[in-house]
Image (cartoon, rainbow, N blue to C red; front, side, top):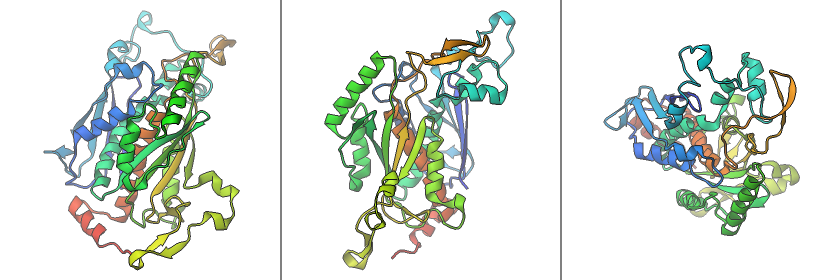
Length: 385
């Protein structure tokens, strides 16, 4: 079973992750991992933090001579900004005069208030540091390792931004060349494949920044090359769509996940939704459409996987919203933390990464083995129609 865990604070010494369950013999390319980290840090609307950090993953264990050993893989990403936060986030106790001032005014829309109450803190800084989306840097690194596994079986993942605020892209994602299309999206400052919409999105972000506000948007993630049979209807927690939805919703700021037509299914008749099964060339089974988005009954059906995720606006606003000082119990403007105006382009890369982790887990559940060659033998002997 594939398992992974992350640790670290936004401004702490480093982010750390451990992933286990990957087979021995998988070729690991550090440049590819770091490329995914680079992609995550791009995008119009990012904050000043991205000018400080240039994320680089260091593999600490589980890989020898460029190949996995089957042991847990430990990864570290050091925070360059740690030098400025050593006292604020000191592991060791400090004297009273060395302590930083406590943050006591929560931000609406963030984990600040609920987290402080849940864990019994008096300083919101304890919540800010772990609840921060900075942690997704490590999930991106671990997801990059999962992507290397999926590539061994010609499974590709890409994404593009289809909406920022009210501006929608009219571009159609090219399923036949998902990786190429993903790279084309990378050339856009907002990862949008529609040049006209891209220009409007950039302008919208500029206007939003000038008002001290933030904006969210929607992203389409596409996976090509998935075999039939990942996931199961046998138990609720084995359903592939449920696994994907839960993991994608666990990305900070994600408020909705749709598979295929998603919410549009509720507006159509069954005859307009379900993908008819027909005989294609060579008597192969195929479909006339892909409204299901590649999953039926919780199982991948061989069609491209289509996922749409929606991100809310970032919770830190420069024109701060109303809040309450928990120390004085008086009305106050919310705390302002260094943040982004729009992180939708970056979240599309994070979405690819966590989807890769789920799909690798489902793949290993279906085609298990302790080394890569055993898994490839199981994969090539799978049943097809």
